Image (spheres, rainbow, N blue to C red):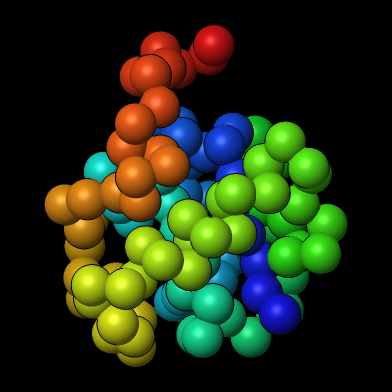
Length: 108
């Protein structure tokens, strides 16, 4: 089990969750943040600090955002498990579910 970052994070990327994560498993894509399912220790520290309420425990993701579980898992298909997001910086892609969304202006 893992935590999942859903649609409210797209084009926002507040990053408060990154600061709270004790295992550095929250990676930054071009338009969204992603939680690495194999590196997450399910501590839940990220969830309460997210200002847009985009982080959910895997079993609690709202139905309208259920595809974001797959987006968080398959975002890492190309990069594997680097063992820490800080050394990676922003990764120059997003999962197709996110990459094909219309751009949002902050605050929409």
